[in-house]
Length: 344
Image (cartoon, rainbow, N blue to C red; front, side, top):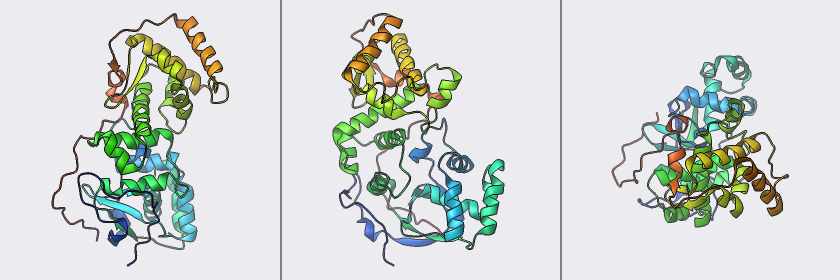
């Protein structure tokens, strides 16, 4: 059977630590939808405080990723296999690419998988569906590492719902957490080293701001990567004057460090985050060096002049582990005989 995967020809297909078949040769199998599992490591779910369960993943996709519209379209038009789901053997048949589509298919087969307040809607879609899609063709990737270039290529394009900047950063962080160096991640993804460092900084920065002592209404916005305008914070942090005000230095292994005392760093960062969350600071109001300088002067008037030290405090010291997803174990892929993945 011919492989019908659309990929970017710019991708490199030799991930570190293993010998990988060219993707067009990856096997395609027709499998039961019920045997496939959503991926708890998917960047769409990277803000969980713990490893999410399958019901929690479905609920999250329904709430944030418009799975209802996708299920409605599948019920009406059927399931188009032009872009196949990508599956790896990782303690089961885990779908590393295509989680929204898998959730929609599962909900059409069993609407009771949805939270109680959504079951009626999915039951209507299931009842009106012209098709009962119980088995679908999927591509079996050799490993998560081998699937990375395909995932990157798809989510940089328009064929699937784009990841938010936070999701992109969390994906890069996940590769680092799995033991890859910055150079290896660059080779694997095709991203420049400077962009990799920026993404690692941003991933740590998001963990830090979720750990700040913020008012409840601000905290609710910050903890939802789809609501909080992280791009605004990212652009602001890219100004050298803002980095100086926060004492921040990008660090390849730690994401970033700060030379400010902990209390001052959290105080200034909390102010910036709250102003962004409430739209006091936007990409329109603070998009020039002069406007940013005036804003920093306002902060200094409020809190006084900062005293820096020679000590560089790593970002992790500002992270509350109970508020962020625990990192993946730092284990590089090992060469070993893989067990057959049962999908019948």
